[in-house]
Length: 283
Image 1 (cartoon, rainbow, N blue to C red):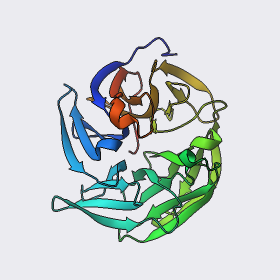
Image 2: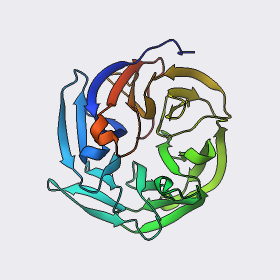
Image 3: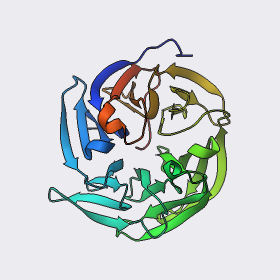
Image 4: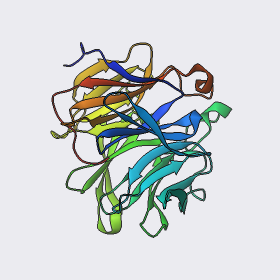
């Protein structure tokens, strides 16, 4: 196991980093309470890519290379066109509360989760839907009764989508069919006391799982065997992404908390640790 590895801080002073994606030599991520998408290079230099007033979350790119951003609190999916963000799809009809993470397939289908309930208002956890957005902006419900659909990956062959169900402590797989439709739902791994948030896939089929409650990131195989654990110390780990020159750098999005108090705390960090198996698939 890689349990003895200690992450190194690449960038700090963030409000709450989420949705990390590796592209063109930089890590892109959403900084929630600064309402911006940020890109950071391996030398730690960073820039704001775009502002999203209703709070950015999941990120991706369509086949034309346009940046796509989940706008959380107004429950829209945005796409960058001509330097500006425009609405690609309105997700509010089927999402009862904030939208969150997303993956965009090589064919241009976006799969977007949502909280399903307002935990901070004391609402009880309940199932919600996973929505698929087609390239023309139409919205479809591909899965129901999902317990806080969160981090999402697609295998290199494009045939399987794997989703973190945060409040069910499991990873769930779907077959990707015609027009990107999801079918044949099955449990990929039960995680016991693990609380999966963001996830990323490696070239041997392992999935790294960010676990904010247990303040760690761990690697799990289909069926549930955990091969590696890395502690993130005092900070919860909310998302992860494999990138770097050989995609062997595991980027971690960490913070002391995820609530709005993060705007004042600015405890958010991008941390890194080197691993043996490179990243694969999407995002």
